[in-house]
Image (cartoon, rainbow, N blue to C red; front, top):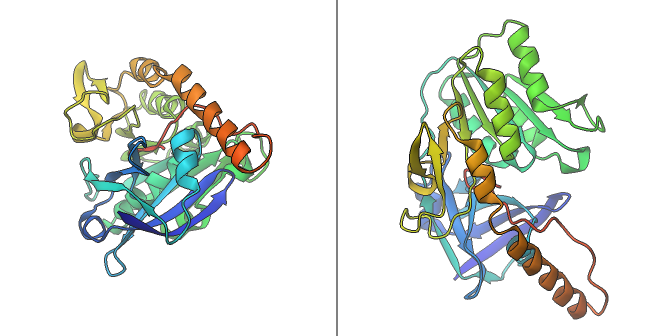
Length: 299
């Protein structure tokens, strides 16, 4: 059992949670993730380790409620426990002196970007950050990203805050302005990462994306998280989660991520109905049914 020490909503349906996991806190590196299971019958949820405090013995995760499992996790109060926390998993981010690095976080993808961007900056690089969300209510970690960035650009799709438009538009403006970019790291929804890779492809800017496919055991045994990169099958849990964005088969990844949409929708509807009854009222229409999480990434 692992004790939750903090759990709070930091944006619309986005939660910041600290968990007592001393061994993981001591060993984790930027880019790695953990797998959490709330109870005996719970789903195994892969989530990026956003931060850790070895002295305190805690790890921090940030996740968005998008399905039954994350909805259940959001209800765990400080002092309560979850059954399993396994990690650190995946390969750490490769850090060296690249030069100028552009870090791009879309929506909940800013959470896994933060520890990577921090390590990039601490590695002596110039860091230009672009973070975006659909609306102001969904924007997260702006101040934290600002604190580590040489330049921070914030966008919202609807223009409700900061610069109106997409993160790809801001990236294209940097390229058009003649900014010499040595590396681009993009984390967020699959369409966003694919779009970033297409923006950087003409100028061949090295682009790394952090993938968040369906995952089960997270040890390379089940094969559920397989993706095609450069024509070769890779397992995200052990070969990633970071890959060359110009080599990822995003079409295949999208199709695989949609494999259980029907089952996910049914599970969420049942949870909302049960939760509404327990609360003594009608269940409200909640978050989208798809359980997409950041392993890297998701969610």
